[in-house]
Length: 189
Image 1 (cartoon, rainbow, N blue to C red):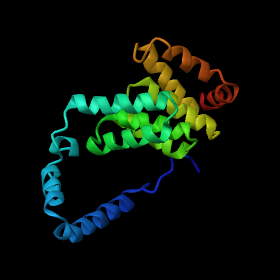
Image 2 (image 1 turned 180 degrees about the horizontal axis):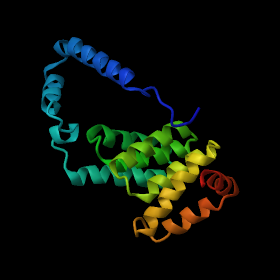
Image 3 (image 1 turned 60 degrees about the vertical axis):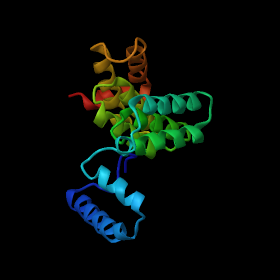
């Protein structure tokens, strides 16, 4: 059992969930008010809710900045709420997933945090910070082999010059944690 295990582990389950969601939407749509139906129509082509509502990139950045500042001053729940709103407005804004991951990790919600970091990495696959934070969650969950792989990816991307100047040192330090180093030795042939 891993903190990365989820409810949708196979295509059949995912397909069933999508069919169920569509049936609920079809049943609920006629009962919705005009404004809500209009928003659904505006987003039917794949546009984000933020785009449909005319929210600018600068306004989205301001939400992210606010969420980040709230995290820095220890207002984790408020930060979570702001970052969740950003995620609702633009589900493809990778920064929201990263911030939500930090908020969940801060609150000790490792499975949620790990899933947020995986979503972040799905949108920004070469960002070593995502691998570092995911690795921290896996380390806390004592999933050492997966943590090793995550820290190794962070190191590899940092060696390519990605991330800030301290990212490589952080990745190397995490790879040197005894449990992680031992797991790495077991994974290498």
